[in-house]
Length: 129
Image (cartoon, rainbow, N blue to C red; front, side, top):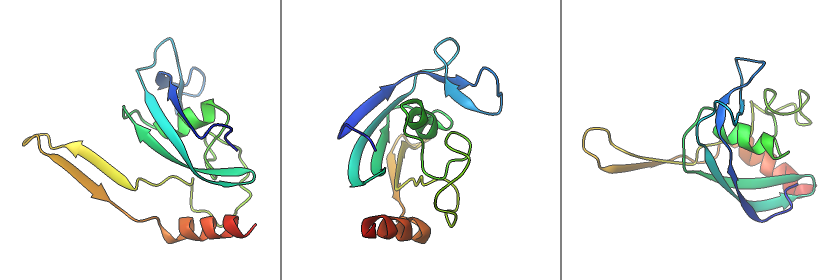
């Protein structure tokens, strides 16, 4: 459970020094990566957070949250191998809003997607605990 209500992880991300298939905070060869997070809801041992990225590195949210001791629930690469919720379909990570500048027109484009049903069900289960 995160102690703070919000925070920023400003740590470069690059290849993991031992496991080349993974990314890691790598101060020697990593590229700048900044993730802002804010608590949306608390559930005892779990925290539902919103992350806003200043950069877009591969696995950025997963690596940054794991680096501060708060891996994503269900993330078997950057978190614990065993998930306490076996019905999860991967890590509990969802891109609710994606925005970017169109490469040809320069116009800002934004897309939103609701939470998938398995994620909604997990939140409801955590609220009942």
